Image (cartoon, rainbow over all chains, first blue to last red):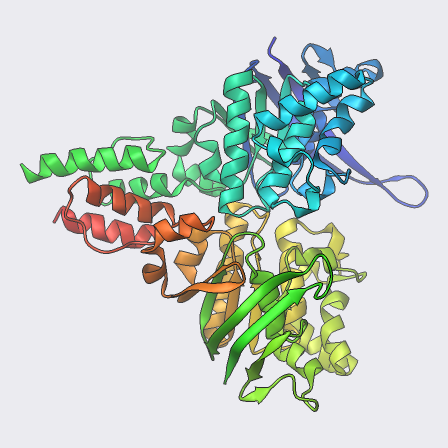
Length: 288
Length: 281
């Protein structure tokens, strides 16, 4: 079994009227199966309201499935006794950094998590140093978080999760509020954690460019997983993605348009490097 | 009709330990009917700048003229200015508060002093312009999806019939389709209503695709000002100030470096496609 395994997970938001009778039921997650191997970098795509965030919140037991079962590192999230373990294994980072930072000094904010877990003081400071180093924020350890840029705050939030030594981090649109530089900083910090420390990453995003370097992609729509596969496979289906209110990276879109116009390009171009190489090849052949 | 900023400076917390100069001698002219994009990294002064344009913030020094009149003159009606220059804040849906979508959109014109009838008419028109489906008019705004809430919030500003519409990152947090829909809506209003539109954005791709003129802010100053093709030529300088050019601009540079005789400085997928296809003719 992988680090995260979902079997026919359903989640329903039940709305009740004043007398407590069921007014409406909205199925936000509809029979989802997932299997994430330890150390993978998995991306979940889907439009607003497709059920991504509801699914994400189940990965650390903020919500538990209405039906089906979700295991995090082998523990069923529905069992109350597992909740603490599950949250320790799967840390979560949200969209707005200002909503997750609580202390007035960076290092205290990062230390909050392990302190809560009852980690001895010496060990806390060791972890704070290590996790700030791992996201490139060590030199800001004595700064006030509200003086940091968005990308820096988000990296502090990630360090806060890392200090709890999770096996897996779930990031729910961590770059939605950031400028281009902030986006790059956060993304490279996350990739680094994945590569160097083998942390499993579940990244939810609306930026297709951020999905390109993932190991595996799930696409959600109306609570269901409607597409899954390697980035190359997913992004070669331009029309299908558009039907799910999504897009493809600019390089992929351009390659798709050029192919439609008759250029002999291969399928599944994801980056501008690949496209430039392909175009050079075409150009050399054409010039002959 | 125009907005002119002459040597505008603004300092937060003047005279305190937290003093921070957010605008430094900004001089700009915004003409009637322009579609402008403002880009800059977080903290570059974009939001401070746009809040000066409708008099929400008052410059420490310098003048601002709206249609030739100094807005800091004593008898200048700032309230009226705020209805003529409509400002849609970041995440405007957080400001929805009424019991129904329709009432929420009526709030602006009612506040302007219009009676219920006129406010209602304006609300209908604004909701239609913003593309909110009629069946949602009497729903609580909190029940709508993210994209629809944002449309309602934009309608709330449109209902005041502004001549200038300023939007602070109107697509943040939306999915790709939602992004395109909101931007198409804004571009449509610019075209059909001849509205002046100012768009603050973190997406170079969106700015390149939609606007006619880009103003780049850095450390409270105007760093560059020009058409997208002109501005993105300076991609190396843009990178130094935390920005970048659209993906396709880098692709074109890469192709040039590989010795391909490609012309132009494409900033959109369509432009890049045309230049590349020309190579193979």
